[in-house]
Structures are given as structure tokens and as C-alpha cells.
Image (cartoon, rainbow, N blue to C red):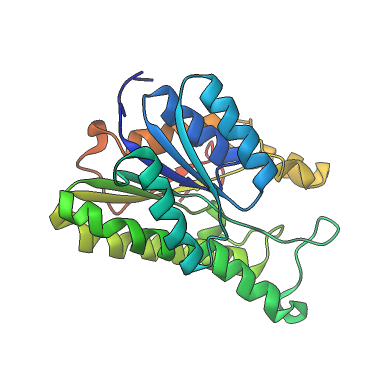
Length: 257
């Protein structure tokens, strides 16, 4: 880790309160960034923001439904005013994967409202925030965006629903298109496709499922949220300035392409 690699850069992280999002925001704070944190879970978001502040980070936070463009727009205005500048780096991390009793609904039994909710958070949320922060990036001719996809975007994964894999696959296409459009302005756009990462969501799966995945993973271990966080920081650093439009698996060799 380079301690001050992101010194004074304003980094906006969605889904920042728990799991991968919390680890990403902590990593950026340790690298000197100013954090704009967004999540729908107010209690967890406030607790995480206070923990980062206790470590010496400069943090602003906002409770936002990322699928609601108007809410995002208002939050961006408040966050940038609080931090005193425009967003340099956007991490579109917010995502959901609904299940019932630990299992996803079959497509033919899925409530249409559930489908639209997942599309709204996982895909529309990435559009909303990207649409809002890129005008200033284009003006500054500088910036970085990371979209959180999944290995489920590339393979059928039986423990996630059709809505999850579909939206995560769409994010890969979204990433390529944004990279092409924004590249001439010095802005990089990449995606991360995590595999099985040790988060509260992973622990809701049954033991047999996790054991089977472990046996298929080349490194024979599950990832840590910090593994994804370090990749996000790399993809928005000077070290990766010639990398854009890519989707990087952070999966320990599970479901290799």
C-alpha cells in the first residue's frame, strides 16, 4: 500500500457501510483520500463514518437510495459542499442479491417488483452516480470510476438470481462504453468481478455451497474484502493510468476465463 497515493482526492463510495464497500472506503482513507460515503442503512453508515473519522479521515456521508436519481443529485451537492471540491473517484459498489431462506427465487416465480428493485440498485444506481459525477471529471480532464461487477456476470451461479447475474453482466458493458466515451478526457473506467469474498452476505449461504466453491478455487481460500479494496485503489491510481475498459477478477482463480 502507498500511504498517500490518493492524498486529498475526493472519493465517493456507494454501498459504503458494510462489507466490501466499508473496506474500500477504509483503504482510501488510509491512502489519504477524503471520503463521501453513501448507503441506505443509516445506522451502519454513521457508525462506519465515525470509525473512519476516529482514524483521522475526513468523511462526509449521506443516506441515499442509489436507484433514486433525485436523491443522488441532492446528496452529491451536499457531499461535495462538505468536502470542498468535486468527486475525483467514484466507486459504484452498491448492490443487492435478494434471497428467501437463503435461496434466490426461480425466474418464473420472481416478483416483478423484486426484479425492478435489483435493476434499480445494481444497474441504475451505477448510471445515476456516473451521470452525476462525470461532468466535473470531464471539465477537469481527470478522474476514475470503478464499477462492482461479479464473477456471476460471466458464469451461471446457482445461488444468485437471474436479476443479479443480469445486472452484473450489464455493468461490464456499461464499463466498456463509459471507458470509450470518457477516455479522451483522461478518465479511466474499470470493473471488478469479485468471487467468494468473506462478507456477511457470503456467510448466509449454506456450508455445502461454500465448500463446493472452495474446492473449485485455485488458491483454496476465500477472499477478504481488503483484496477487493486494494484492487479498487490500484485501478484509480497512477500505477494503472493506461488501464481502462477492463473487468478484473478478484476471485482466487474461481471460475477462471
